[in-house]
Every structure is written in C-alpha cells, then in structure tokens.
Image 1 (cartoon, rainbow over the protein chains, first blue to last red):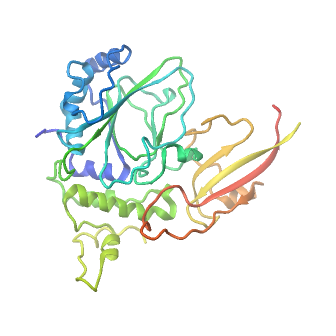
Image 2 (image 1 turned 90 degrees about the horizontal axis):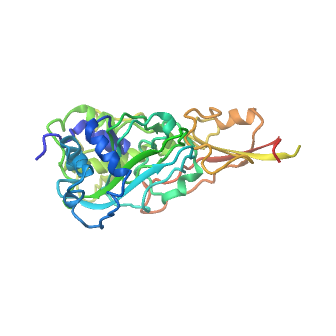
Image 3 (image 1 turned 135 degrees about the horizontal axis):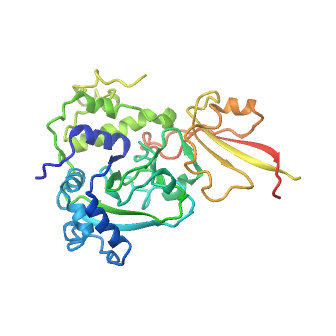
Length: 280
Length: 93
C-alpha cells in the first residue's frame, strides 16, 4: 500500500468540488522527458479499453510520471491499485486559438461511483496559455457533453494556472473547458481516464476520517447552483457514504429525513448531523 | 447603421428576478464560438432587475417545472434562465 495516499480531508474536497489540484508534483527532469514524448509519436499507441493501467506506458517517461509515488498515491486513493485504462488524450492547443465550450466528457453518466481523469501539465501554464477551466461542484449534474455550451461564465469558475509538473485529479462528471491560448506557442496537456476494478471504499488514508473538517467541506454549498444547492449536498453525502463505507453518514440530516420510514423501522440518525447543518 | 439584437442570458439564484446572478452568457452579431467563455468571473449585472434598469428587455421568464417522480434529487442544467434583449446600432454590418 502506498504511503502517498490522499487523506480524508483531501478526499472530502474531491467529493465536494469534483477535482483536486497538485501543483508541481512531477519532478522537472521527468517533465522534460515526458514533454519530449508528447512532441514525438511515442504516445501514438492508444491502447484499448479494459487494459490494466499497470501495463500501460511501461518503457516510457509518461509511465514514470504515473508511477511517481505521489501520483500513484492519488490514483490508488481514488480508483485503487489495479485500475482499468479507458483512454488517453494528448491535448495540443495551437498558438492563438480560442476557448472550447463548457462540457462534460464522454456521455451522460449517472453511476453512483466515478471514473478518474488525470490531467498532467508538463510545462508552466500561465493564464494567457489557456489552461483548463473548471466549475467546482458540477460533477453530479446529469448533462450530455456540450449541452452546457449555452453557459459562458459562472460565479465560482476556476481557471487552471499552474507550474510545470502539475496534476489535476477530476471526477468524470465535472464541467470544464479549455481557455483561449493567447501566446505564439503551443500549450500541451496529457489526460488519462481510469476506472476502478474494486469497490472504491476506504481506498484512501482514513486515519483522519473523523476530522470535523470533512463534513464542513462537504457541506459548503456551491453558490452557482442556486436553489439546487441543497441537492448537491445530498449527492455529496451519498458519495461519501460509498467512499467511507459509513451508511449512516449525513449532512444537515437531509438523507436521514428522507429515509425515515415509521412504517418499517425507527429513523437512523447519523451521529454528526447536528454539528453540520448548512444554512437553512 | 443597422440596429441589431443582442442577447443577454442571466441565470439567477432563484425565480426571484432580484436574486443574484449565478451564471451568464452574451450573444450578439460579433459572437464567435466560445468567444466569451471563461472571460470574466463577475457577472455584468448583479441581478436581472439591475439589467432591466439598464435597458435590457426580458423576453423569456423560466417556466416552473415539477420534479420527475423517482428523480426528485437529480440535478442538471440551471433552472432559472432569463433571456433579455437589447437592440443597438452595429457598425460592422
């Protein structure tokens, strides 16, 4: 088991926001080697879906990026140590190109657990190069790809501005878009998608599972969601139940209230609901 | 100089048009694909009512919808989409 697993606080941020950012996680020399591969045809083998991720990129610098212990720890925490490779995508933004529309990747996907997408930025990505923009907390929304292209800007949208070697870990459902590249150079980014082969239960470091900050993070309502904000809290509580293995976890007693069925049994009250009541 | 339509689409926090704007889009004769995507993090007006005071005309108010049985907690597109228009002289047409 890796010593670089995410802790419960980091996992709660992933569940709440749908992403985590790890600036400059990959060493400089490895960034140079991976960047050279991205500019060659070394990554032209697209693999196949169902292939074990551990078998991918065996003799490549890109493999060393994903086997770099802090990166491997992120993967292990989110999809376990034997994940399935789904796809990779080399993103090349040409000089002076525009932004993309907001979108979710793949297609509308209502599964309760999640696939992991890792974004690797091998070189510095200042604002003018147009790094990926994300909408924190949008990952539970059931929309189909570019259906959200009608929106241009959100209060709370987050622009990726990062140093070389940065890794972003994304829930498969997060709304995102690339930004305009205003420079005369290319901007490169490498994305992989992974799926778990084991239940995504307590794969992370749970020694701080009872830290009250976990529930505080999960209960922060996303402003852009408006009157649906509480529904997002319900989605987070359900996913946290799955990831923590605690079927009684609740936020604001929203689930407990819904699940109370006096015809069948006494209500099951989560131990922490009183301490974490969102604004109501 | 022709007078052309501009569209301002505001997504308010609630159906109350005085509630804060959460998201927005602008389309006009100069729009290209995604020309306005991600360019600003502060809405052009704090509320729909504020945009109305600035001369924007509401041409669509969001319909009230019932939750679909069995999917009461599903979330998807933003609910409170208000479409406004303004006609302005356009020098490029």
